[in-house]
Image 1 (tube, rainbow, N blue to C red):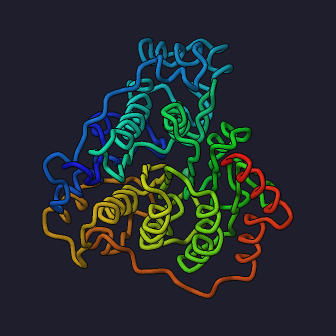
Image 2 (image 1 turned 90 degrees about the horizontal axis):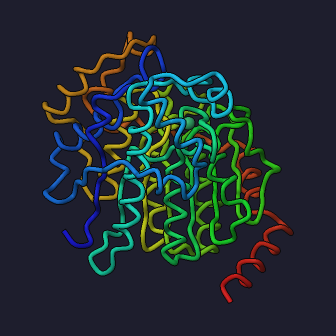
Length: 386
Ligand SMILES: [Zn+2]
């Protein structure tokens, strides 16, 4: 299997749920893994079962007291009010559930294992897909936005620790990749680029917020396939090419899809597959992560198509019967599930959602590319490379 793409997952996602009516109380990674297997897209040796990251590994970024608090939360299934307040555990969308430490630690373990594989020498795969990763809101000492630990930050730190000096992070989630951006604002070896819906939680990543190590592309509601293609081709790819990364990490949150209940963006999964194909080519090694996504069918089909994109499988127009059966067996208590369109069960691809590129989209590209700032940024990069 030397050199061929790898897929990392874990069985923990099959039995663990955020519980109750939490938006993450739906099958995502487990359904995606079942779907790619039903399609015959996981050959022997391509799949790797992740193990949880250790407390010591998590401490490369996270505060030791915070890590210990989440371990205690898993053991006791409760935390004291002061701990909850201090670390945002058991509040603000970050519930205490049976695997509240093991599950996020496994996402981090998957990302760290992916990095190890990418840097494993002549046998290294050029691309690793870890759909459990992408928990981009996690902070050093607190949970945020359903994210307890920040696996992209830990993965990027390991890439740097192993000697890489230029790592590109591109975040396609509907929400701003704030935790990753903030972790590397003062780190010239990392460039973070986030495309996200404007005026949506966490309300950061505005058009004016551009810097030497970070770029933001806040997009309007209704953002569609042609507009994403425009921003990828006219802003993200040029920025990435100028940066000449040794590795690219792509966060593929599926909550910007038109079928997702959490955002007002209107992408089809085709648009994300195309973006991943373009971005993946920016560096000799790529780590493709998951992220948000709150419609089980949309997430699983999108991420299955991402694995097909990076691993080179042809996406059939009509799903084979075992794959359709899997999708039809999913239950989702949500108003969107009352009248589901047929293609949620019978096809992997959504109908493309193309249209005219609105006038504000080129302005967003220009802001991210920068004017005078771009010249300064280029000089910083040149100094850094010298
Ligand atoms: Zn999101």
